[in-house]
Length: 436
Length: 174
Picture 1 (tube, rainbow over the protein chains, first blue to last red):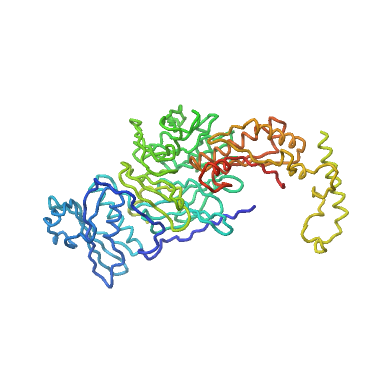
Picture 2 (cartoon, one colour):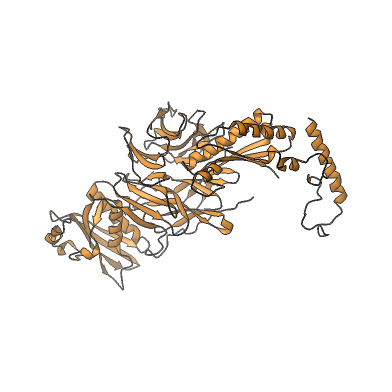
């Protein structure tokens, strides 16, 4: 039977009206009792008609979802200053608010907008940050997320990851009950969805290139799995050389020049490194067991992968020597009968993985493991580029959903689509601030 | 060897019958059985004669009619029952070297998707290995894995999982 791969670039440009089109519904499942009390005052507006976007609300939502902040509900605001000069700090101290965000937006000629905001330390009555950002209508949401990033970094010391994106796969029943698969990307708050690929074939393991310009994925065709790399800006897709058997689990090397992947051309599932410029592969693992789901260490000096060489699926690490030759495999997990699909935090200190159908995180120095999720049938964990959160796939009574959990396990949120399942999430790298 | 001659005889007979039927035009009452007159059709054999490949495969009394092998969780081990069943398939394939089979490996929804792709392949290869051991030529079979991507049972319970952990023997054209 012939299956047609429909590959098309639906929306090269994000949706032009920034307030519409939220593809994912996001609910907070569990808050964090230690969250920092903050107030984000609705931003002022000067320009014709109403403001095109409620920037303050987007910032407050970002901060709340991170689990690190507890923004004051708008109804509880004692005043609505739009500039530090209008702030009476004692009023906010009385509400036990530690930080205050005030700002205003104005319309400029040529459909440009300027947003000014200030982050204030309520206890000391001082300004921690003050910025002016200019943006087109199209990029206003992005500007709001960048404001959230600045606030997050000033208050936690960690770079914010609100101006980032998610890649994921959705599945809906099409005609005659046949599933239709879509590979999509959206902003981290579910807006600006772009469909990268639509197909009758199952799509697995989307992986962002380190520069965020391309996504590698597996298409499970009727003739077997095939790996593609698609540029998300041009829509151009490249099929990697297909080997007999498995062509699975692509993982970008930190320099973006290679993919670690799983092939079975030599007998059983082994990990190889595919050189993207030369279209050649070199073998990493040699065992009678299944070796798959490679993840690179961020310094590029090794990989972590799933292997059942010890009888059950467990995680192993292989380091490369200075000539790039793989060393001996070292077993990392011992708790549980099923440890698989690792993802390494961007700082290389932690590893998240599936531990007996839940999401766990392990400190790679102490090897201490902690189970993070309270859901079931969890899969495909992926770190935010700042390492603060993990997004993963899980099951709800209605079908496949995504969940995000802070690395400390203190706050969780659920991402769902209105119809069908969503799965295989991958959190993008940081976006360059100048980049569109 | 005897089986091969039987098959050849059947094919020759079918070709002969096909040749006789060939003047029939597609629109002359042959509706509903398109292609029944083509020379390579193996179905047009009278009852009582040597069995066709299709008859051999689809005889509900024959072990060959059973073409799904089931597995335990995270396992590619074949039970002695499966081995006996696969021995019958291997004998059939050895006797019919022109027949090819696709061994399609699958997994249940538990565990990670990529691991299950490899697990489905391991199951298909386990079946392949046994068939070869029992006399099938390696070129007669191909393995493919769909992991957990193509379940036959859609539930989320033991019964659905049991049915989905499988290798299907797909004889081309049957």
